[in-house]
Length: 113
Length: 116
Image (tube, rainbow over all chains, first blue to last red; front, side):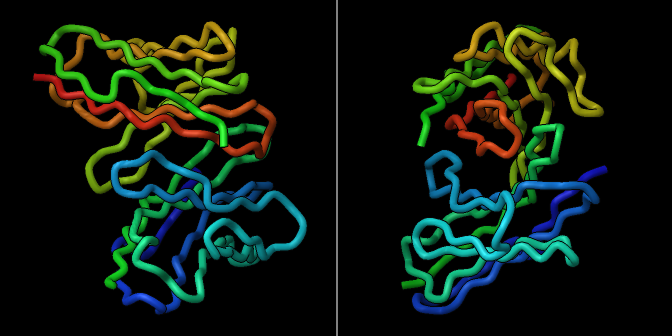
């Protein structure tokens, strides 16, 4: 069965620290990859997405992610986090020809001011 | 981004009754809608995928007779939890996309269902 793994369940950082959240998926076919963010009390919003081309994609608010096909990974990064980045982050995979979105378990990021 | 509205935001119902949750795409035509269930401290579990005008495709382990999904128009899908029991209490989230593969999905705000 297809699965999406997020290894960090809870991350605590100080402001200005660098962030990297891991995401791995298990599916041998073609995929699109997404990172969604859920701020406290709000619904899920798209941070960035990878469809094809340059494996390094840039999203909103200074986030970026790198697709490494050989590692089935799509890690999220930000060089310097801010207190306002406190939220829960979800990695998602969309399978080719199935158009289903499977989500990882989410990572709660807590940025201390 | 596009707006998806989910209603109600929360509902409390008695065991044995049915509850309907609506998911509307407000400013785009949602060819495909997804229904998820989220347990506390867990991920979103895909329950079913529905395409407008056709029957929903349910994920393995999801009871189609218990979770009735209707996607009668390009802007509305409904999830009805029939004969609800306390174990059905959960957070239900819908999302919608224009249906083309790879198109991002837009999410509703979720519905907290409590069955007493």
